[in-house]
Image 1 (cartoon, rainbow, N blue to C red):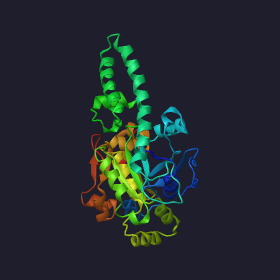
Image 2: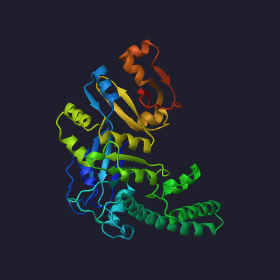
Image 3: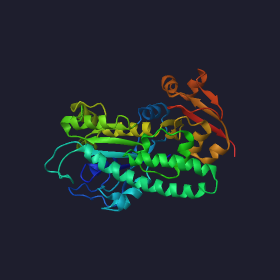
Image 4: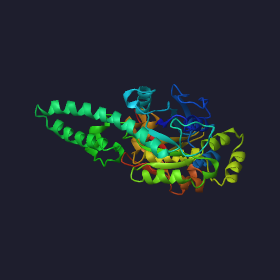
Amino acid sequence: MALQCGIVGLPNVGKSTLFNALTNAKAQAANFPFCTIEPNVGVITVPDERLIKLEELVNPEKVIPTTIEIVDIAGLVEGASKGEGLGNQFLANIREVDAIIHVLRSFEDDNITHVHDSVDPIRDKGIIDTELQLKDYETVENRISKAKKASRTGDKNASKELAFFEEVLAHLEAGNSVRTMELNEDQYVMIKDLHLLTIKPVMYVCNVDESSVTDGNDWVKQVKELVKDENAEVLIISAAIEADIISLDSYEDRQEFLEDLGLSESGLNKLVRSAYRLLNLITYFTAGQKEVRAWTVLKDAKAPQAAGVIHTDFEKGFIKAEVIAYNDYAELGSESACKDAGKLRLEGKEYIVLDGDVMHFKFNV
C-alpha cells in the first residue's frame, strides 16, 4: 500500500526544508514564495526496530522496509480556491494525497520573510482552511444540484443524499472542515466519491526553532488548543534540525546529536507514526531466507486482504495463513522454535491481522 502524504502551507513556512530533510531530496529551499513550482515527490523508508531485529534473527539476503511517499506541494495564498497564485495546481495536487502534513511556521527569524510580514500560525492555518473549505463548498453545491434534479423524479436515494449534502454544505458555510463531522457508514459512502479536500486526515507540524523543539512555545500551545476537537495530530518539529540530522553520516552520530538536544527520536519517526495513526494503518512482516519485508495494511484487515497487498493472486486463492506474533518470534528466535513451542498458528479467512504479525500465506490459483 503506497501511502502518500502532501506537505502544504503558506509560502516560506519551511515546507521544502522539511521535505528535503525527510526525503534527502533536492527541492529548492529558497527565501521566496513558490520556489516549489511542480510537486516534488520523495520516498522515505518507515523506521521500524522490529524489522532490524528480524534481520538479525533470519539473516536474509535482503531487507525491504515499507515506504511513504512525501509530496512537497507549491505554497498556497488567499484566493487559491478561485485560481489565485498557483491555486488550481495546489488544489489538484492535494486532492490526490491520502493525508495532509500542514506546516505552520512557529518561529521568528528576521532573515526569512513571511508572506504576511508577521508570524501567526493561527492566521496561517485559517487561510488554508478557508481556501480548502471554499473549494469543497463548490464541490458539494454541484452535487446538491444533481441530487435535486434526481429527487424530482421520486428517487428516494436522491432525496436522502440531498438532505445529507445540505447538512455538509451548512457545516462548510460555518467555517468547519468536513473531517470534524461525525459521519455514519452510509454517509461516508455517499461522500467518499466527492474526494473532498477537508475530509482528509491532517497532521499539523509546528515548525519551531531549536530552543522550542522539546517543549514547544506559545504558538504551539495556541495551535493545540485550536485543533483539540478536530481529531488531528499536532507535531513539534524543527525543519532546520531535521536538515542537520540528515547531513550526519552515521546512525551513532545522529543519535548523539539528538541526545545533545534532549530528543529521543527524530521528527521523521514522529511524523511516520502520526501518519499511521491518522490513516489507521498497521505493519505485518514476512520473513524468510530470501527477504525480510514489512507490509502496510489497514487496521482490522482480514488475512486475505493482507495477502492481497503482496499479490492479488494471494487474495483470490487464499487458503490459510501461518501466523507468529512478533514478540514470540523475537523471544524464541526462529520460526522453527516458535512452531515447536506452539506459537505458530494457522488462521483462516476471518482472521484479523494484528500489528507486528509475522505471516506466511498458503494459496492456490
